[in-house]
Amino acid sequence: MTSAYGPYGHDPGGDVHETVGAYALGVLDDAEASAFEAHLAVCERCAQQLEEFAGMEPMLAALADLPAGGGTPDIGAALAARPGPRLAESLVGEVARTRARRRRRGLYLVAAVVAVLVGGPLTVMAATGGDDGRHPTTLADPHPTSPAEDAFFHHMDEKIEATDATTKVTATIGMEKKAWGTHTVLELKNVKGPLKCSLIAVGKDGERETVTTWAVPRWGYGLTDSTHESARYPLYVHGGAAFDRSQIDRFEVETLDGKRLVEVDA
Image (cartoon, rainbow, N blue to C red):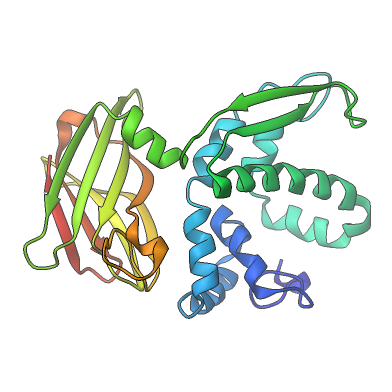
């Protein structure tokens, strides 16, 4: 993959800021992701765009459930899938032949991203009549806010909250029972960056599971008196644990280098 891309995983003649979308979708390899993270730490523009892209993964997961029809590939699966190394090398060698298909797939992604940015309804056009698109089926999934925020306020069965006396960071965790474990949405306030953080679920037997990870831009989240407009709003981020709700003892929000920001008893 790196043979056809610059150090940030994009065309060498392109704009490094455009890489934020690929980073948010997790399609960069380790070296490219590390290089872009170094850029992200000093680029307010990219950090803000990354924040606005929060929730893309749940939407892609929802798209993956869309039915395929009329011989058309499953659009949701195509969006959510990550190509393996061998396929990536093949794509590099066949750019001309696959350009049209990649452009169509890009349009679907742009539609989803725009819906997140404007906070309006998400409408996905799924072509079920063949590549000519003459018989589209419109599927609407309204999200008046980001998907994580919407789930936090409308779908969480239980919420628990705590504020750390030292760091002053406040975390509220919404939980929803699932057959596979526990679906969570974290609301985080009064935290300043730049930081890389994780939410850890700790079982009653001491077992630890990483629920989700994220980056905090230098202007932070949930700082009501901040002069930076984006910093005034809390962070909302999806996650999931294999633990059944009854098995969870507490949640810990910590930086990736091990600093505890807040602990929430379950």
